[in-house]
Image (cartoon, helix red, strand yellow):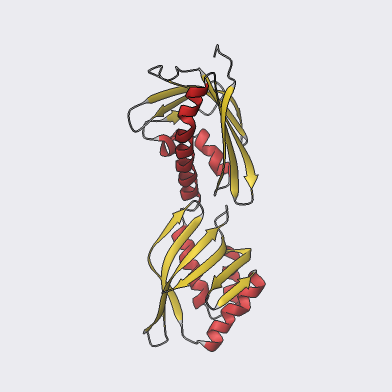
Length: 255
């Protein structure tokens, strides 16, 4: 890099995944390729080669100048064709910090030319969104199992077993809201679940269809049935997940 890099862009996002998970995408080529595209690779060490193969065939290269797990990665960046910038002519810095919702990622990309900087603004906005989804999807790969376990709580009549299951999948501050509910915390949800079995004995709830997840939020449809098996109600739940895969909030919509 011979020119002074005085024109920088900066973008900060929060990724719904633990920092250790996010950082591995800068040391594991398979995960790096999941983010950037097939054929992309990274050598997660100082002096390691960064190779990015975009879906449209454009090829970019870089070299890792600094890497401090799980906090910081610095690498050069430029294009094989030399346009708009050749390899080694710009600098990318990625900073990772713990966040209550997962990981705060700050990206700084420094250039010697303002027009070239502006050319990359939307690209990074898009690429970091892809990254956020890829990392979150990996972190919450068992979301369907978690949702099924959540419904299992509602169907568990034994209070001690229900409490044990709650501790495994629910955040202590769990909030549950629907047209019949407005609870906050495990100690508030516990008697609410018990009341369902008291006043609606035999009622069960189960998932209908697949669970969808996007950046730490998931949705699933549900159906309730009476003790005789007839349908009682249907609806949709929205789940907010913690970075370690527990449920922090559920909002229920009735059909």
